[in-house]
Image 1 (cartoon, rainbow, N blue to C red):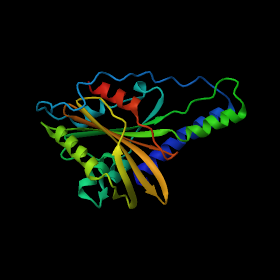
Image 2 (image 1 turned 45 degrees about the vertical axis):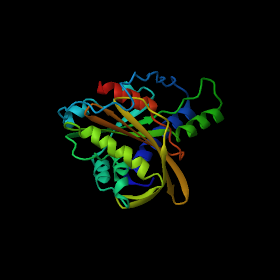
Image 3 (image 1 turned 30 degrees about the vertical axis):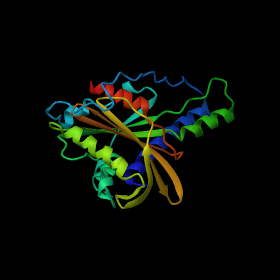
Length: 259
């Protein structure tokens, strides 16, 4: 997807992957730590809306964001003001689909009391000790296809989070046949929105696979949205390889931090 956010996300993933490639070609170090985070038991995948609550501020949400220590198998980076500014101008040719565009563009749904953002890029697997030059090169190239995930936290007063979640749930069904979106001057054609692998986290969760056409090339992205009380967490994943993986470890770690 050739939006400003996606370009920057992809560039960030490339920088990390190229660094790993250089390491692989020059020698091997310690293997990356494995992400042993296990999914926590959710209250329900579709529980009733939480009681009215006071929304959190930007600063409060920033403190609840997933951090590097929470994701040893990822490189966690801050989202720049330019990225959030570009996302704020996103549009869609179908109003019903705009919530999906916002969820993938670091933009809050409705009147959020606070927002916070971060990016998590999966590390490539380093070659084993004694690997050949070809094996090291392959490991570095494989790292270029790592999935990068943009995480957005949004907080709301009362039932705002539940209402925003319901809108996103409805958008998935209404936009199954696709839509067009524009961000920061770039137009992208979404060809299909389909259910992603089921996610059970927080009070309720949804997952979509969103396919796009980019100059004749098919690209598949992942979108996961989880509501935990008055907070909505969106996870939008992309990959240079063209097919992103669902960010299961990122979702699990972030929901755990929400308490």
